[in-house]
Each structure stands twice: as C-alpha cells, then as structure tokens.
Image 1 (cartoon, rainbow, N blue to C red):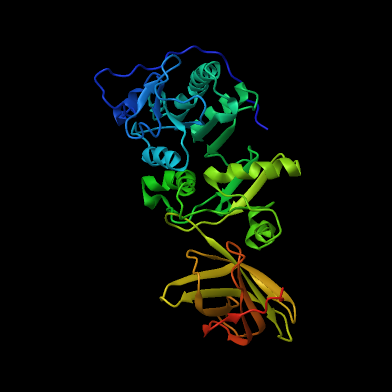
Image 2 (image 1 turned 120 degrees about the vertical axis):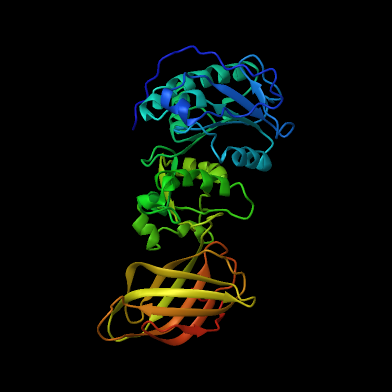
Length: 417
C-alpha cells in the first residue's frame, strides 16, 4: 500500500481573461516545455446548460454549478509538448450525455508542461491542495462528498489519490487511468495490463509507440460512455486463468453480474461490500480499434478420440447477411480426452445475433510431422454476453488438422448443460 504524504500550500486560482468569451484549455508550445512553466490552476465548468462554453470558476465563483448534483473533476497528466489532451472534449461531452452533472476540467497545463517529468510530478501535491480548497467550499455550500468524483489520468491519477487521502477515503469515487499496481476497490487489466492490441510494438511506430498503450485506458473509459459498447470484465486472480476460461462464473445466469469497465463500474461496489472484498482484480480483452468491445462465447467440445489430442481451435461465425467474425483460441493448447468436455473461451470482435454457419479448424501447431484428426462428439456454442440466447450445437464432426470444416448448427436441447 502506498503511503501518501502531503503538505499545505496556498495557491491562487487563475482568473479568466475578461476578453475570452468561452474559456479554453491552456495551450502551450514545446518552447514552454523546454524553458519550463510556473504552476497555475484553472477550473473550467461544463454543465448541460453550458456544455460547449466553459465557465471559469473558483472558490468564490461557482457559475452554473449545482451543489445538489454530482461534480466530476477531470485531471490530466504530464504534458511534454504543451498541447491540450486530444481526448478532453470527448470525455466532457460523454459524461454530460450519460448524466446531468457538473463536469470540471482541472487545467494545470502551466505546471504539467515540461520535458522533465520530475518537474511536473513535483507539482501534483500543490494541485491537490487547490482542489481540496475548492471542494471544501463546495461542502460549505451544501455539496456532499458522496457526489464528488475525480477522474485522473497519468499524473492526474496521483493528484486524485492525494485529494482522496486528504478526505480520508470519503470521496464518492476516484477513477485512476494510468497505473499498473492494484490500488482500488476494483482494478481493471485490459489484455493483461501490458501491451495493447493495435499499438506499435517497436520504436519504429514513432511517438505513438511511447504513448499508445498508456493512453488506451482513456479511450477504453470513453467507450463505456457510448451506448453501443459495454465492456464486461471478469474478476480473476490472473490473466492466464481468465484466458483459460476459469473466471467467467459472473456471466452465468443465477450468478452475480460481471463488473463493467469505465463509468458504470461503480454499479459493482455494492457487490464488493456484500462480499467484504477490499480489492478485486478484473481482466478482459479488447479489439484493436474503437469501440474496442469483445464478445465472449464458450465453445464446449466433447471428443471421442482414443488417444489424447493437444491443440488449438479457430472458430468462425457467419450470419445470413454475410457478416463474419473469427476467434483463434490459442492462448494455451487445449487437452482433448475421450468423453471429457473442454470449455474454450472464444472472443469475437462482432456479436452476431443469428448465426447461420460455423466453421472450426483444429491445429497442433506442428509444421512437420503427421496430421491428426479430432473426432468431435458434440460442439456447443453459448454466449456469455447474452446468456438468454439459444445455444447452438453440432454432433459427430471429424476435424482434419488445419482443414476448415464449415457446417450449419442446430439448436441444442433445452435441458442440455
């Protein structure tokens, strides 16, 4: 557990430019990053009444801020070039779309803009003190700590933590985007928490190589604000266990619901209280591109080979409209034994409502040597995202290694487990 120490430092908030009709995020140049900037903090309020034109607020001027509604602070991080975060506007509008709240951008770009990371990090506690002073005044005016929510990105996540400690953990909620070690009531690990799909793997990817993986957390959070993408996560001890399908009980009917990534993760806190679980890790996979959603299915296979077979399965789904989605289930070779059911967790980029055909490919991964057969007594496909959907089956298949077998599934008997 990190021990967070802080000191009291008084600081004035930046006043708005009287000639600026709609205040905007501070825009600086790379020259500013080289020579360094002194810290100033500007708070900009957006509400549904003024969602496109910010109001600069401070401890005495609150603009349209409604003390009875949730107040969400967005705190950015290190800005080595001085430019505004490209995701900021989308995050503000996304939050206002899902809930009628106060959204406050904490603009500390004069302080975060520097080529020396330690210079920016040394100012984070001072920014936290400014937020503490402002929140104190909200409380005086009748606001509730339960309605205070801080979203911190990178160094902004540290600032959020400092503020939370100042209130002895009584803030309504903190979301920290940009830290690997478990710190929260629930910690989400996309794709295991390391390299993200779609990000450059080498320095040849240019600047994107350095920021893509780190910045993905923000875009995953943004995806949770869109109606067409709800990313489900699965509580688990390790990414390996999740990939092997050992941690998806929360997606089965009559079990507890699975936590959702992002804005609606807060819906799971009551379950955590009931289980008296102080910290939970949750794992999930994503697609390479926006909106990043992955749809989970179980592929249950019972074989009747006399000898044990080890290998992987590739499954492809196609609907009547010709849409195709594919999953290579090759995290670890599966072990197929006679009359034993193997349940493989498949991940698809699309969720096809009505599957017309299914294809399976069995592979041992061997380049040379004999080709094997996998004799399938029964294959069953079941959706975790939509468990109410009919399960699809097929019986008596022979899969020749590395040869695609395409077939039309039939509905499984309802009493079949």
